[in-house]
Length: 287
Length: 288
Image (cartoon, rainbow over all chains, first blue to last red; front, top):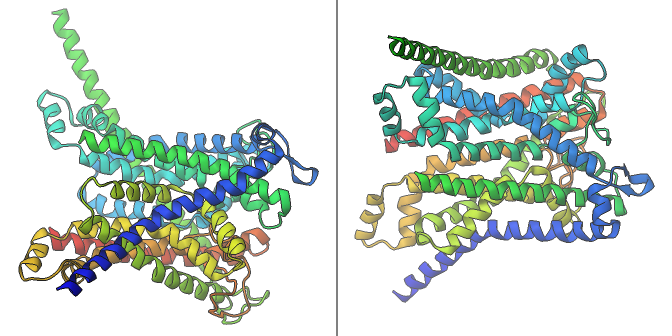
């Protein structure tokens, strides 16, 4: 009996240990990123790093303001292209789509979520870039191209999270609205959609996190010049692509500054994650 | 009379609005569907003509640019990563569902960190993996460094899907087992886990999809060198198929081969998704 009890305890401890692996991983990631990034930032000067307008590793100038601007621009573009379309499509799936069509469309959207980002990048390079070249001239790469591709890439995230929250709204909301004389469309848009608000917003934030963290696809279609973008078609470099493009050959301070770029991105992501968790909790409570 | 008329027109307007909304919703559904068709068709049409036997030659040379070593590296990467991540993830989920008390602080911490882990972009995982495994542990750019990085990346997927699968097992199973005198560990391993296997499997397959599609986390950890042949040595460098596609882009010389690699990646994604949804359906039927 005693033996059995100790065995039970042993396993409980093992399970608990496994559960803490993810907590330990997050702690380690924070420690390693910050410990490697902050000293370099301090050496270069925080202000000069965050608000410096020149990125010239060979001249020892490490300002990432163009990259921060770039990241914000392409993410904003992705929101403009991806969010309205994604939300409308989620409403379509939850309230309008015939069952037979749903059985085809839903797996297709799941598949979009699973396609590797390099493949998206190639698609952008071979399909979107030539079209942009025809319309705007130049090399066809830049903010607009990256925004369109990213908007496309975040669609599945936004659609599936929003659809799930729309479906989680109690049917009574919808029926009550119909009983008051509203049409099906009005009920979906004015009753069910607002009721699912925080869940949908959480989905949008998740999509934003994806867009700001995307690396490969953006590297292929953004043009990657480390300059301030001055128009929608101007080449742009984001925080993520700055790392992937130069880490391969960087040494010394240059490498540390790239890690520091990662730290800035990481802080952006942590803020986004925090918003997401808070909204999700709020959504969970409301229902 | 006038009031009546205005009510009538208002009602008509509402109906018109409803119609417009309906059209807008259908149009957006159609746009998403056609985007999907364009993407898949584009990759297939451009890629299939470029598939050649040379690309599947056992030995990679700069002449044939064979993707065979990359394919085998991918298989090795997937297997090793799953071998480490699945036990940890499944046991963690067992703790969360079967052992932890509701509202306990441990569950809150684990849940928050798992969510955080899930939201971290792969490039950050890549940097972290490089800093800890490649430099601090001095493993260099090796398959193993890539594997350990990916383990952390897919852990949240496995924990979440396993949790859902365990929660879907009816309590009567557990009660029956306890009433027959089985201990908790026995109940978990013999009764609850077998019932949850299809759900756990669908999570594992989902994770497989993430592993083989990953690039940004692997470029700095397992490296971008494609060997002549597949060695299978986890302490050596090796690039997976997705990383190989990235290399082809980076070199900028091998557009045709890149199209072909895209097709292979797409077909693998389709296969994995089909398998995962088949298993998920099986779970649904069992409980429904």
